[in-house]
Image (tube, rainbow, N blue to C red; front, side, top):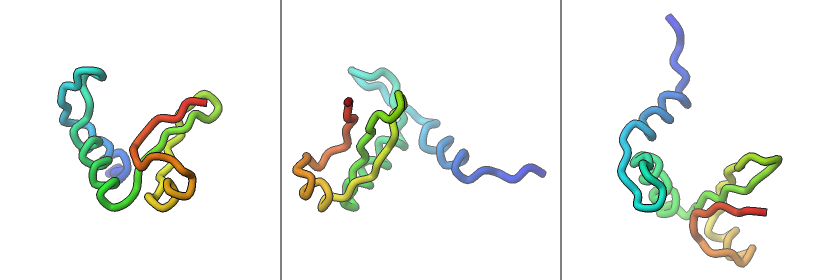
Length: 78
């Protein structure tokens, strides 16, 4: 028997249900909920482009205040 990869299983559950977004088409409901819960816990996700690929960074509310940036999920383009 092949062992399940827990990360792949989690990604499957986060992305299996979608909702329609006016701007972005179909978006995964689980990912949206995960981001909302992260923010409630005091963290946001910033995607920063590194070597042509977006790299996620989890930033705390305190780090946002120290850096002088808004406490919101966002994509940072260089």
